[in-house]
Length: 308
Image (cartoon, rainbow, N blue to C red; front, side):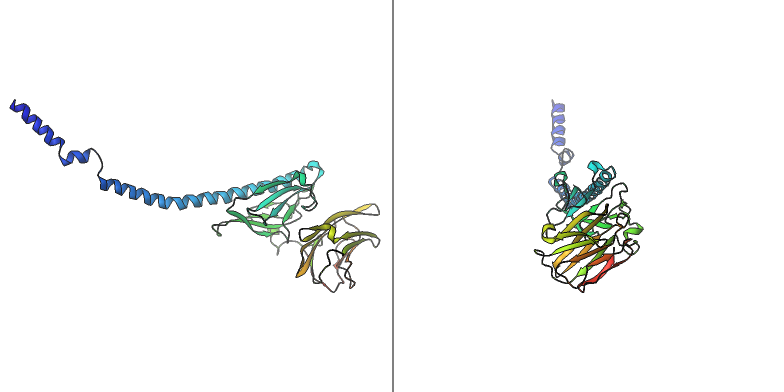
């Protein structure tokens, strides 16, 4: 009987000892320390996780944009629906968007074929250098780009996070700048010309006249070809059985002054061309020799005529 009591005493003494409680669980202090460490880790991780997500959005948006550029080029090369295709950038809306369109230009496109793509709300087109325009159109058969330059996307939340795409006149689309993407190294010719015009134009009543080979005339009423606040006209004129293709547009219209952009590709144009505007009696806006190697102007309002 004494032996049993001794054993019971030893058992209960061991069971109730502080060491026994410590071995069976955690103290309150230990739990608080663990929670504090977890809180610090979470606090450090959340900003990094958000940054990772936003960087992934920029990468994904950029890759998708490049993919759609190449889709437009491939559709053009395949002569799908016997048409050119291009991309138009719309930075006037939030989020920014871009549109894959069918046609020689965005203004003259078949809108039934439009496919719009939205950027992530935290991504934007912040730099568009395409010779003053907001669209890229590819040529049939060759896949060459009518516009060259670069387009940059960036994170709104971190302006240092930038992705730039370079488009060359040869049709190359790359993340690496090629030689002819640089304005200094690019070969310039009369296929694309710019000039400034300081007179205020009456867009309601004035018209632009194209005179080919001294006789064939195409009259363009400015009011009929306004797209937003800009003039955009593109067409072909039959001159002695040979079609001449020209594009006339503005990059700014009566925005203090006007900047005209004329596209006349001498590979498919072989007639002289003189362009005038009805409200200006001082001379022509621009004239081309038949081979396009000579360009000049006589209007007193024209300045900075330059090949692009």
